[in-house]
Structures are given as C-alpha cells and as structure tokens.
Amino acid sequence: MGRFFGTSGIRGLIDKHLKPEFCVKIGLAAAKFFGEDSTIILGYDHRPQSRTVVSAVISGLLAGGVDVFDAGIMPTPAVLYALKELGLDGAIVVTGSHTTPEITGILFFKRDTSELSKDEEDIFEEILILENFNRVSWNRVGRIEPIDVSEIYINSVLSLVDLNKVEGRKVVVDAGNGASSGILRELLVEAGLRVQAINDYYDPTFSGRGAFPRVEVLKELCQVTKAINADLGIGVDGDGDRALFCDEKGMAYWGDISGAIFAGGVIRKGRKKVVVTVNTSHVVKWAVEKEGGEAIFSRIGPPAIADTMKKNNAYYGIEESGKYIWADAIYYGDAALATLRMLEIMEEEGKSLSELVNELPKYHLRKIAIPCPDDKKEEVLRKSAEEVKHILSTKYEIAEVITIDGVKIILKDDSWILLRPSGTEPVFRIFAESKHPKKTDELINLGEKIVQKIIKTN
Image (tube, rainbow, N blue to C red; front, side, top):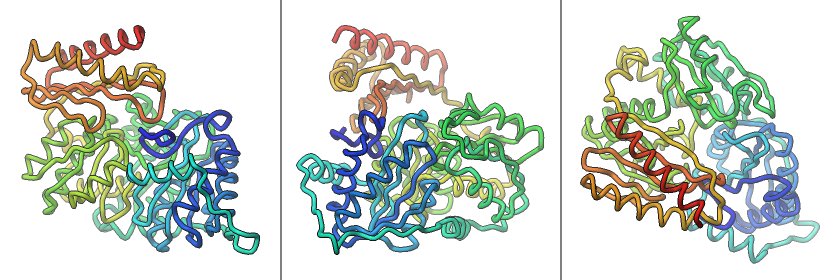
C-alpha cells in the first residue's frame, strides 16, 4: 500500500487527510504526471465536501498548465465513457463512492479508462512527496470549461447492448441517493425498459439505505421488485459503479453470484479468460471452469483487476462487491451496463434471475471487518497468517497459499480463508468460504480470534 494511495485512489477526511492545501498539491502533482498541455476531465459526487476538494484540485491542475473539462456531479462511469469518447489524456473523479458520508476520495484514470497501476501510483507519489511540480507562468495556465456528459454516457452504454433483448423488461432501481440518481433511470428508460425507481434523488447523507449496497440493506428494493412483478432489482452504490441484483422473487445476491452468471456468459461466447479478485467466491471460478475457461486471480480493486486483465488479455473481470468490468466498455464498474447485460443473459438463456442462480452450486461465504490501526496492519497480517496457516496445517491439507493481496489459504476441499488489511479504511478484513456452512464459521472464528489477539498484544 502506497503512502497516500489505498486500494483505489486517495481517500480520507477533508480536515485530516485531504485538506484543501494538500489537494492543491495533488492537483499540481497530477498536472506533472499527466503532462503540461494535457486535457483532463473531472467529475465529482454530491457530498458537500467534494466541491471543496474539487476546487483545490482544479486550482493545482490549472496552475500546472493542464486544461480541465468540468463534468459536474456525475457517476464515475459516466466520466470515464466521456474520457474514452473524447480521447482525452486522463480523468479525475472526486467521490466517496460506497463509503460513509464524511469520507472523500480522489480517483485518477488514464487514457484507456483504467486507474493508475501500482508503479504509476509510486511515480505520482514521488512527485507529490518531493513537490516536483511544474508551475507555469500567468499566460500558460490551464483553461476550465463545463461539459455535460449525460448524452455521451447514455449513448455509449446503449451501443454496447442488443436493445432487442432488453426492451420491455420491468426493473426496479435503488440509486441509493447517490450520484447516479436520475441519470441511471433515464438511461434504462432510453433502453426501452419500464423503470420504477426508489431513493432516486441526491442526498449527501445517503439517508435512504446508505451508500454501500449490501444485501442486508436492500430490503425495500427486494419488496418493491417482488410486489410489482419486476424482472430485476438493482442496488447501486454512491458513485454508480457497483451493482447488486435482486431477483423477481425478492431475493438479493452479492456480486459473486451475478459475477458468476456474467462469467459463464462470457466464456460461452468464446472468451476464455476471466479475472477474479482473491476475495471473490469460488462460485465464479466454478462457473468459468465449467464452461472450459480459465480463472485468473488478482489483487482487490479496479486498478489491479484492470491491470491483470490487460496483462492476460482477459475480456472480463469481477470483484465480489458488485464491480463487473468488460474490456469493450471501460476498465471500471458500471451499474447501468451491468443491468442491461444481465437482462441480455436472461433473454438469451430464456430464464429468470432466480433460475440462473439456482443452477450455481451453493458456497457459503462470510466476511468480517475488525478495527485495526493502519500502523499495525502489516505486523497483524504477518503474524496472523503464520498462526492461521500453522493451525490449519495440523487439521487439513493446504492446497495453495496466495499472497498477491493479503494471505489466502486454500484447502484441498476448496475451502479457503483470506486475511487482508483494508486499503481504504482502518480495519482488518477476514473472508472465509466453504461448501459447508459450519466449516466457513470455523475458518472465520479462527481468523477472528487470532487477529483480535494480535491487535491487542501489539
């Protein structure tokens, strides 16, 4: 983990981590990184502090000689489709995404719509730490121009879908009071869908059900979807890149399940490689291998997924949180495209979402987060991994240990546990999965006991 960058971008509070004076320096560093005379598109979410961060970042960009298109409040994927369509040099999005209202983040994207790789983050951080900025003279400062990217977003997504396979379907959208409020509903209507929307207005406190679309907070979405006999319900995060789906019976699913359905569809159409983050259920791996494809593990987060996709010439990537990435679109999640492509698969297979889900084997995945100071994370990971591995080796046969992001210990029966410090929050995460719920509980309880002990004694 970089000194400033976490799993995705730079995040924090504006009175501690992203103070205005620091954000000006971030803008200057971005100007140096992208290059003088570059043109950047910039968007942001509706959190009250986002405008403060945006203004400071823009000031640094302009002072470094970079031109800026200001897209205003927009979902992150909308900004990225505009970056691609207009052929610009990069994009910056200021958003707290799925996090609580007080958190802000600054995300950086390259020409190809992917976030900076780890090596590029290191270069950016070196510029920032050394303050190796290029401040241009008064007559060479960048220009700023407002831009409405709504039409680009809608047309770009619709061009990627066979509208004949989706029109007429009935869906319920829970925009979560986030940045996709309004525009996601408009896009789906343009696709020919009948749309019912809830929590479909900007609210910086995300009072409807929070910015993070977890299964347990989507009860209203599930109730409405079942009540009006809709084909699909969609729960979206604060900036419109994550999507969790609810079936026609009112059952919501984590992104692993929908990700497995997408993966199977991708392989059936001749694409043989799928990128899967290490914390994603092995149901995705099962779906890929069932169709004769190859599942490739990556670190968690869109930057790592996109980087792994490009290195392995993979068409599709998935993170269990509800991010689905297709290489023919943008190298980032997009709830709108995910919705339409799920409806496409349902039409192609002639099945409802519940029927598609029932074809998948049952895995039992649990995840917990334990408060952990950032300065303890590295030591907690090292010591807990050693102890967990030792204890498991006395009871079970270990098939594989993956250390690309945290430590994932896979047992011979395909059960596994992942120990991983969060890259965005002061917590330590533990994931465990098995085909047997009692074994999942055993693995989670083991990990939790050991991690808690190490945090307290260090």
